[in-house]
Image (cartoon, rainbow, N blue to C red; front, side, top):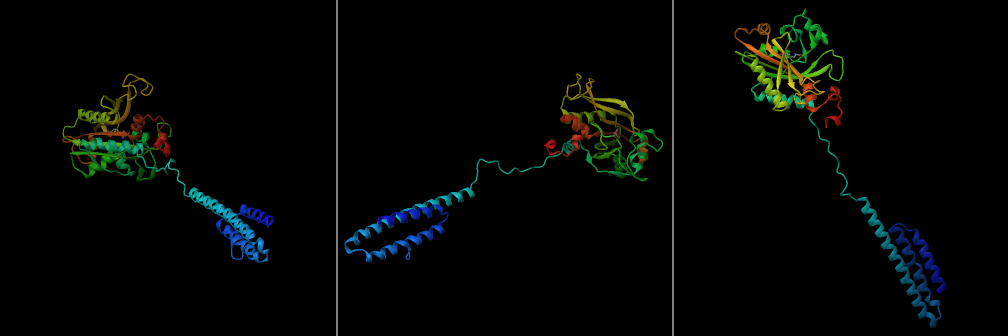
Length: 337
Ligand code: DAH
């Protein structure tokens, strides 16, 4: 009997080590302790045992049963534990892990400068108007005192769609469209894309953005122009900025100016940004030419006007220290961020 007991336990242990789930374990359990199992068979066998040995035999079978049950219980616990661990691994959450990143949009610097420019002038009482990116030559050139034979037309000559349509070379065309629609006094600003057949380099692009202003009223003079531009420059770059008007030529203004601001980088002392001049050119401006007023049917004896055109990219580059204009158009998310 003893020998058989050891063999049974050995076999059970062998079987059990291979078991991986509860179902397999149930089968093994049935084989040993079930109604038709090994233990039952041993128990039934008691009738063939000598009467005086039956007590011992019964005790041995019982202790064997206990041993088998212990082994099976132990294995049951082991399987349950490993299944629980597996489940926990599946549901494991690392509370210290980074959360899913939400990518939020950013305002592009061009749009930001445009919006801020609008804000400055609407606060001064200007109204925002829209123009056309596809313009007619009359609005873009002729009405702005730049007839076909005018050399200034060459400098801006551009992308024609057909004889009567072109991509506007400046936002100044909006001045004409506005004056054709409204009677003075007029105070408007407008902004958008403009196009020229420029070679693309660090400071030029065939497509860029301008911001145009027009103010028509009685007795408008250069003092008004300078003050508006000073307010703009100081709100955009800082209150200690100075504005300088340098006489220059644009066909649609008289007098015309190129407008500088004191260098944002060195404050006017002279540095590499301002090429040691202390000044940086930021826009063109002037008093509206009498011919332009006449072209839209206004009497220049009665009405005067001031106008200005600002390069949005130029302002953005100065304000944010960007040395290559192409950065503004590359659409690189890292740059925008
Ligand atoms: N349209 C000019 C340009 O693109 C800029 C400009 C100069 C606009 C003088 C104006 C102005 O309104 O008065 O270069």
